[in-house]
Image (cartoon, rainbow, N blue to C red; front, side, top):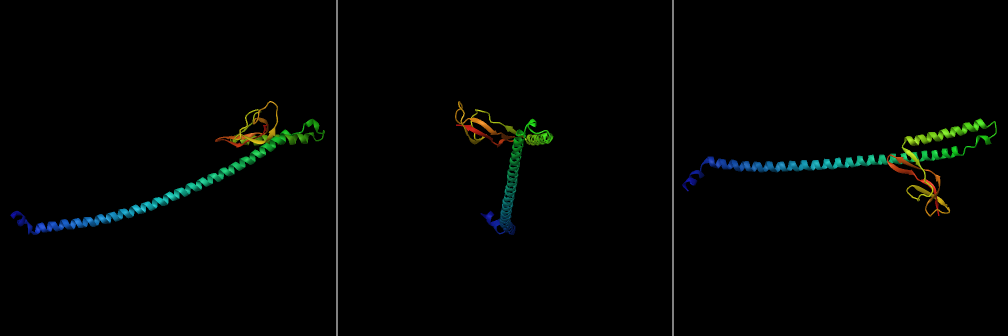
Amino acid sequence: MNDVNQWSGTPTLERLCAELIALRERNDRQHKLFDQALSEARESLDERFAKFAADVQHAYQQLRDALTGEKRHSLALISMLLDLTLDLDRLAAARPPIEAVGVGATDAVANWAEGIAVAARKAQATLNQLGIHRFDARFSDEYQPALHERAGTERIDGLGPLRIARQLEPGFASTAPDFVLRRAKVLVSE
């Protein structure tokens, strides 16, 4: 006990305790300031990340809209090219025989017919370059709505129902990616 009383009144020990208490209080204040700064930094990062995520989402949506618009536009152009190709094929197939035309008009009709045939071949070559190929519906194959457009019905003896009776127009498909651009127009058996 004497030893405790001996050290209790010394200024060094009192000063040491006071310094420890002051150090602890300063440490508590600094810790609170650090917590505040950390909390503010976290909130700032959260806000900046939320803004970044919103900007990325907006940019993605714009890109997606642009691609969808381009795809829609491309499909419309391909559809028009397919119509043109079919029209040219019909014109080339309807070419009058050269013998049926009078002698004076033979050269003009022959040149016209050859021009139509050349235009039809060019249109077909353009489709091939774009990776678009023609496909035909075969007689008596099963009618498939994904591949065939039903234009009507036709009765054919010996052919069961929902079979291809006749093709009116060919179908067209893309090879990359592989999907049907235009279904083959067909008459279906009754």
